View (cartoon, rainbow, N blue to C red):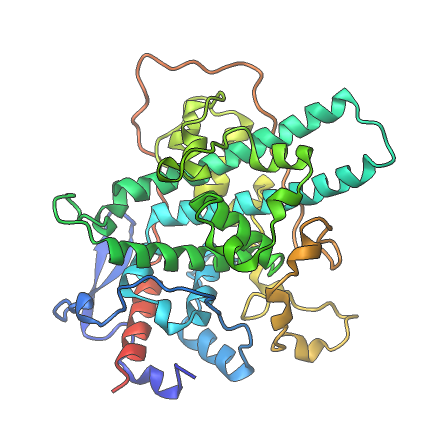
Length: 436
């Protein structure tokens, strides 16, 4: 096991420093008095990882206690005890294999753009699985029923919803690609884009980040439908040609889709160019011919002018406080639910009538991390009790919003990421890489 008891050998989190008041966040922050460490000096493989990357999902009771004591997010006074995106990231980082971790990956996971990106990806994947189940049931029903014009209307709404949610992911992804905002220092050509491209280093960051995103989404959605999540995330980021997950699993799931399923789940913005000119489905959503409400492009960053209920839902989902989710009717997997109803590893605690109550919080249940691709593609995931309700997106406005004479530029209030948690994971990584 990588992190034994001597993992805690380094000093406490708040040693060798002082406290100061931060006017921007209006809270006390810890400032280290030690000279900055040369994080880049840590020997991290530069080549992108290949093959299957396995996260641990068999955390025993001793390790759970260690995680809860050293790494679990601590509540601030008056703070609601609900599951946050940080809690899910913490579980993913704790169970990740050490060979994919790096100081840069940890830093990327703790910037506001990345948090919006992760929330948007969770929202999209949850709705995608929801609609995939609905479409599979509709296709089965068509064997004994007649298709009606109303069916086309319903499926068109599903398709538009999926396209809009893909766009929320794409806009944050584009920010990372161009090195905008807080992602500037992670750009492969440097913050000023003047140095030679570090393609190997960038490829490694992309591959490890994408695998980490799949794990975070899977955890946030209650450890359900792992293969479906991995296949869809890989498809929208890499396109069908470069989809390494599909090449490894050989499910051929897109070819098996009915025409109506393919139209809804893939959308109208799919382009099939020559290999060198291929863009990912996310980029195709940004440059699609369909009508797009321009205000979606600034959600969470620029204050929206007269937002519709639909835009407000999306805004709160990707950039709002998790404490308000239940009051606003926002559904984002297990995020926003009471943390007391889950165990340390964010598995739901059993009910009083369930068997094996005392063992459930520490049981492995590693089999749930892999859903069979042959059956889960077209069958509902409703075998077990739902941990969270379905997403119900407000409908689109019937009117078309025209471009204004001047675009708004008033910044949105951006929620800061946890600097305390970032430092915890950086300290842990350095201890794991340099145990002596």
